[in-house]
Structures are given as C-alpha cells and as structure tokens.
Image (tube, rainbow, N blue to C red):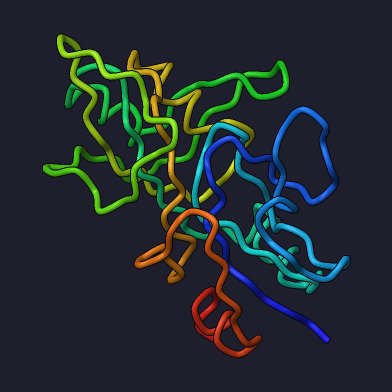
Length: 195
C-alpha cells in the first residue's frame, strides 16, 4: 500500500534514512516504514518541505525534468540584493553543475517586504549589524544540485538561509521543523497534479 507524507526537514539533517555517524538523518526525526524514502533531496544546510513516499510513479513525476513543476524557496541572502541581481536571477544565469556550464531556466525572483512567517533556525545565522540580510522568494521549475545557492552566489549575494516552502500546491504553512503530515493518494495527487 502506498503511503505519502510531507515533512519539514530541519537544518543540518541529511535527506536520507540510512544512518550517518557524523550527522543527523531523517531517521532521527521521522519513524516510517523501511520502503518509504524522500522524493528528491534538500541539502544538509537547507531546510523545508520534503515529500516521503513508496510510490515510484510519484517519484518519477516529481523528479523527471519533463514534468517541470514549481518549487518555491525563501532565501535569506548576504547583502542588500539589487533589482539588477533579481533581474539576472529571473532571466536565467550560468552556473556550474557537475563541472559543466548550465544555464538556469527563467524563474520568479523578488524581494520580500517583510520577514516570512517561518520558525527560527537552530542555531540561528550569524547576525552582523552592518550587513543587511534580506529575504527573497524564488520560484523555480527545476532542481539542480545546490542550484539556489549557486544562483545567488553568482549574482553576488550568497545564501545565508534556505527554506523550500512549497512544491506545487503543498506548502509548509503551519508546519514546524520535525513535523510530519500524512496525505492520502487522492489528496496529494490533487495538490501536486490537479488530478
């Protein structure tokens, strides 16, 4: 029987259930059957929405590039990001993926006027009074390895904190780090693919 969960992966947790002696993994937070695995991944130093399932067709539809679906990120950057940098992000930029030049697809990128409604990070980012650390919202339809971090660094504003907030119509609204919510097949397919 297929099972579907969304989880809020905490900061400094590996996106895997196999144990790691040096670092925490999903196994430290979520108790699921052995055949449940994360769809895609979030970096160790990133936080946010992960889908866990044993449904291989869902895995294929979310990870295969031909099904380009939206992923929304809240990104705290180092420095007062300019409108020119945001425009560069929107238009697509060249980053390095596995030793090759890769041009990112067009995306949505804008500065948030206020701090997003998110839980504090433990430990918090290092605060520096003289350097602003604003938040931007990025909406991508692709997910290359460390793509968001590479994109913001390329335009001169490195990522300080990164949270995947949304995949299609599934969000982390009212979800805290370490939380897990189970979905039925019908409800998760409806939210992801409007089926």
